[in-house]
Image (cartoon, rainbow, N blue to C red):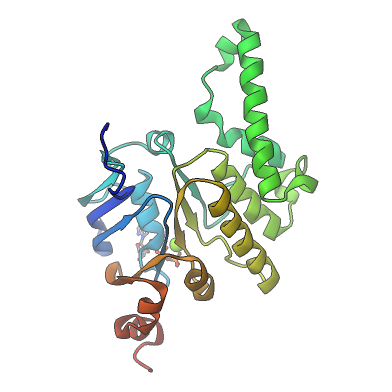
Length: 261
Ligand SMILES: Nc1ncnc2c1ncn2[C@@H]1O[C@H](COP(=O)(O)OP(=O)(O)OP(=O)(O)O)[C@@H](O)[C@H]1O
Ligand SMILES: [Mg+2]
């Protein structure tokens, strides 16, 4: 663990293979994500993008390959353990608790950072109180960063769609991650909501010290925001490079346009 070189990548995914019966969801996928890097994964429906996230955060067990975070192996660990190591995630279909308010959802995101359990909290009330004040302050910073002030006490289920997607980002950020996995943060959004989200993602990058993996069908957003891009097709990596390189890659063009170009 100690003495991990600063230059070493934060996340290293090597030769990942994942099968469901006869379906090969991922086939020898390798990539690295540097500290502070925004790395994007693109590919048609069913290409295996969400499966990569599910392998990284311990929901799926790949048949082959290794995943390491700052030199520590991730695969084989439970989703809770991976979250505890600093990997947070937003979901393609919102992961908020609809009956809880926005701030309560953010506080839940911080749960794994809390040292005082419920029982200890009853006996060490002072410490629990101090801890809660700390966590509320951290959530308030996120509320401000994402300009969610008007919705603090709104039940998540009543938030307008674009705001709910932003709240979902906030919930993940509340975990204070070093690596954030974003699964289609602008899916179903109109042009204006998409531009807003792009602005918030830029803001998050500027203000917080974290790396992100962005999965998104909106290629304009990907090309605008990403440092590097991995293109997948039927679970197989077909190209990795800068947005410019990816857009010019004949295999990527073929996968997207079915050879029509
Ligand atoms: N739990 C599962 N059981 C069986 N097959 C699965 C499971 N999860 C994913 N798959 C299959 O693995 C392949 C990749 O799915 P995945 O959800 O990773 O694709 P995706 O790139 O995220 O697609 P989309 O853009 O539609 O979200 C698909 O063929 C899918 O049907
Ligand atoms: Mg998906």
